[in-house]
Length: 259
Image (tube, rainbow, N blue to C red; front, top):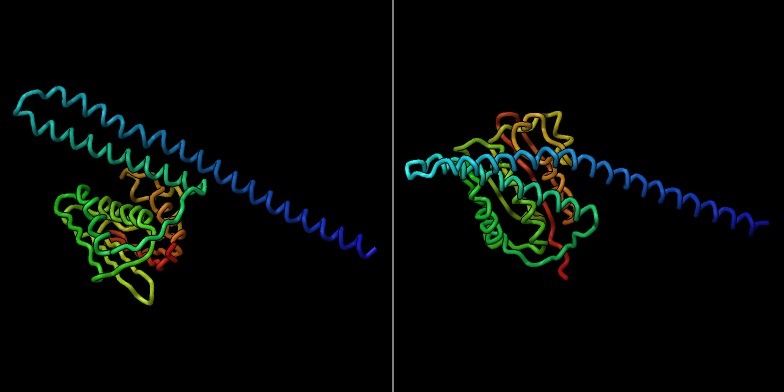
């Protein structure tokens, strides 16, 4: 009798475990379907806008064949360039989210010189700076870390791109990196439009865009992906922001075990 009771309790335990696993799988599937649905909705608008700008600008360039038409040509070339950059951001964000959701992002630690890394990353985004904007990394001398360079590059390119995008011309973009208590600390600071208080809690959610940036291109995926990558590196991320004064994104991350 006791043996049958024990077997029954074991079977019930396995059943409860199976039900919990099934529920978790169904919730994950629901979440993925929701992400797919929201992506299709976003992409149908976000991809169409820059493609239309490229087509119209290319057609207009053909109407200015003369040498003295160069200013007009440059104006439309600039629009094409901006649209191509936006399309590249859309594709990068989409591919990154897909790899994360499919569990295909692997961590590959290596020793990184952070002064060299910061300068390399700053050079990559220099072409995005608006007239008069300045970006000069402030990095602790000889600072090194064992981490995944590819993920760090994605994190900081995204944060710096946002700082540039949401800040007016003629302002400074700040970026600091230093070590404290065995952690690498960082700040990315801008003097832009800031984030409404009621939106801060949703800032790292997928497809979320603050209500005061709806006129600026974006997918609403960038900070969500940044948060996922920071989590993979066993780090933490936070934000301080004030409307019309600017935003500071804080990140800290540890040295990873070398492989």
